[in-house]
Length: 85
Image 1 (cartoon, helix red, strand yellow):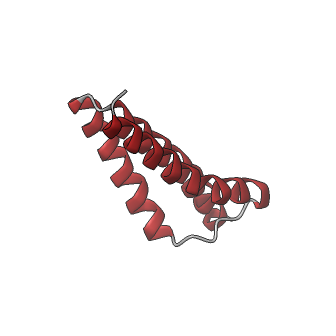
Image 2 (cartoon, helix red, strand yellow; image 1 turned 90 degrees about the vertical axis):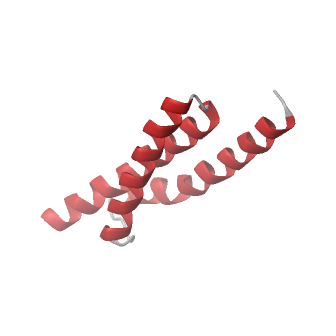
């Protein structure tokens, strides 16, 4: 692993880690305080970037975007369940 990969890995861990407290709180309270439009755009963007990073073969970028899409997807699911009733 070279220096650039180490920096990328650290950035990935910090970014993915920043979603963990929000996702845990959302699951625990069954309430997502985030704006629905924000979550929709974020899930779509992270999903598209996941596909792109797979195509270019960048595993750090792939992992970051996959986990970001997954965690924000959980928040989206809870938000949609709230709206449904």
